[in-house]
Image: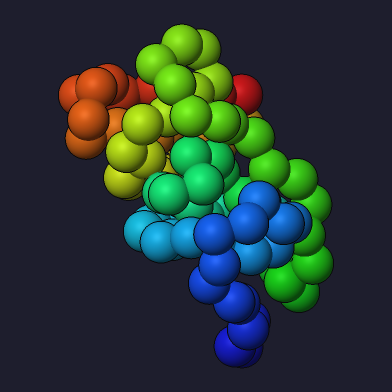
Length: 92
C-alpha cells in the first residue's frame, strides 16, 4: 500500500518536513518521526491521520532533532531518540 504524503514547512496534519523514521504498532497504526516539525504523527493502517504530538524544545514531549522511532508491539509505548539532545524518550 502506498500512502501519499507531501513535504512542506507548515504544521498541517498529515504533512511532513523531513520525515525520518517510521514504525507500525500491533494494531497496524503507523508512527512517523516528523523531524523538522519536531513531532510524531500517527496514522491508521489505511493512512488516515489519527493524531500528532510533540513540539520544538528540550522539555517533556519536545524534540530538537527527532530521529528514531519504535512502537513497542506488546504495550502502548512509543520510543524516540533525539540526536541533538542525545535523549532517549518513551511515551504511552
